[in-house]
Amino acid sequence: MDKSLRILVYDSDDLSVGSTRVFSYGIYRDLKELGFSVNYGILDDTDGFDIVIYGKNYKNILCKDTTSHIKIQIQPSDLTDKYLSQCLKADYWIVGSYEELDYYAKYNIPIFYYPLLEKFNLPSRNISSTDEIIISYHGNKQHLESLSPPLIAALEKISSKFDIKFHAIYDVQKLGIWKKSRPDINIKDIQWNIDTIITEIVNSDIGIVPFSTPIPNLLASFTKKITGLLLPHTGAHVQDYLLQFKKCTNPGRIYLFQQCKVPVIAEISTAACSAIQNEDYGFIVYSYDGWMRALNILCSNKEKRKEIAENSFKYVSGLSSVKFVKDMIKYIQGNNI
Image (cartoon, helix red, strand yellow):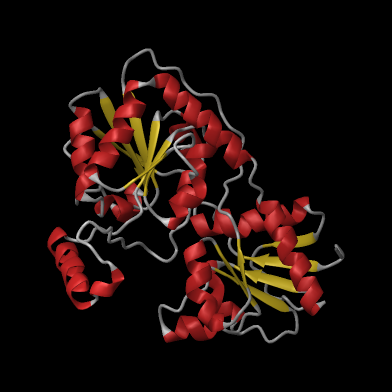
């Protein structure tokens, strides 16, 4: 592998932005670890580089880049025709989910998957002398406002059995207090902060990761019945699961809990299944009874929480974003350089 390549990762230095921190700066650090000559930042002149990797929010700069170097776009988008035309100027794309790998295949641009692993030193956990159990969520307020009715009901029920405090970690200052789909339980709204997020998560007992967009029961029931009537040969049944989640759904939020040695309960999705192989590593649920079963097991058994946390920590510690970057550069060198 030729390490004389001059590479630029074109993005801002605001690491509070998730796509910047995990994708752009993560790839920059991986390239440095591999021994490449790599620059990071927003430069006026990109002409002296062999490869330029553009951050999510710089599609408009990439499309104006007329130099001969290889152009890579992080997190492409076809949400509008303008976004798509900008992204199609790139030679390669980088995504963070298997759903996106599948979705963007139609554009016939080589796509690389990059695992969304945070890079940090694990702090010590504060030992609590009380029976209080902290259940935490971290991420976008959007997921909180679309919590499924089964999850809301399960959180309210489990809070009547155990001393639960729910920590909701999101951008309170920018997005305001979470009100929609808010369970009637003891909740602490915590401002997401790059300097404190890891400490907040490390001191949690259980992590929850909702993924799906709730489908109203009436609509779900109607869809299943119509499918069964119109397409009886498919074996469609009213007991079938009907799921909806974003194409950019990824295991990054699960990984962070695992890296912090916090056992996870995640809503069923491709992303969840890729990070939680079986119940030695966490729980994948969807129904009210599924949520209740997982919450009961973890709330009632401190040793079980510790066992799952250690198992999942070993698993996630074995993942390496460096390997993915190395394979990406080798592929590009073999096809372009």
